[in-house]
Length: 163
Length: 169
Image 1 (cartoon, rainbow over the protein chains, first blue to last red):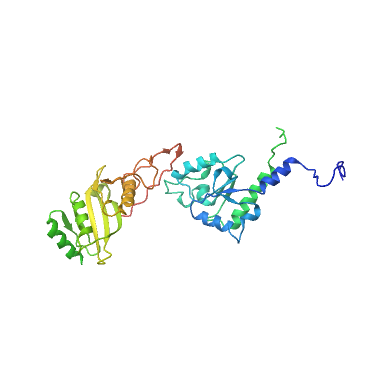
Image 2: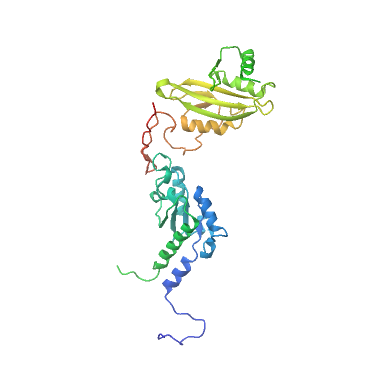
């Protein structure tokens, strides 16, 4: 029962703008289709009917211009690493990166002998959430996305952060 | 046709000089001289009794500095007569081992030869588009050669050193 109670007409909601923006942003994480290897099959499975990525508001976009989250699913080779960087640069801010599976996180099975594999996608783009597994089950990717949602909810867009 | 019949057929056409035959039980092949290989390939493809219309695969081989030999192995198959043959083109292990390209005879050889050039550095004369296939264009070296050493940096990204494999005696 605050001071502003019954001061307005109907359909006016009083709240914090930051929380509203965070709520809106975190519940529409349009992800960039970035399937590179077997993890991509797992990502498709996550987007399909049984695990239903769509209930988080996550929908796949094929263009970097309209995506918020880049899910790097699969082995990133040296040749692809340059393209990953370029596509990440084309994404509009605010942008987030989920590194899915062992290959994207650290090189995975190619750690020892793969001269052609980038040892972790964090060498070229900044990563927000790492999802472990080889490949991660769809539940694991959902968990990763929920962790990212928590992070987005906490971010301040309008309020001055006291330093 | 058996392998010996094919061999006699080739000798009738070209004489004995460009050919060499191996009679090891599990390693049956006909070795062809590098200079004559293009004409031989054309003959194998066009002759109605042989008619090898399908090139199944091309393999590059590097036997290392001890033997000082590089090979290109062609596996041919005829869909009409259902016989197979393995052809080897053997050369010295130089920086630039040159082999005539068969890409204009069997179109599939286009990518096969590009891959072998990419990984072994063997050059195919007469190939219309000899670029790397798997690795980036500006990669240094040919990874399946025995004397390959990994470059230190690629576009500012550190390339990890491969641990030397233990060679079984």
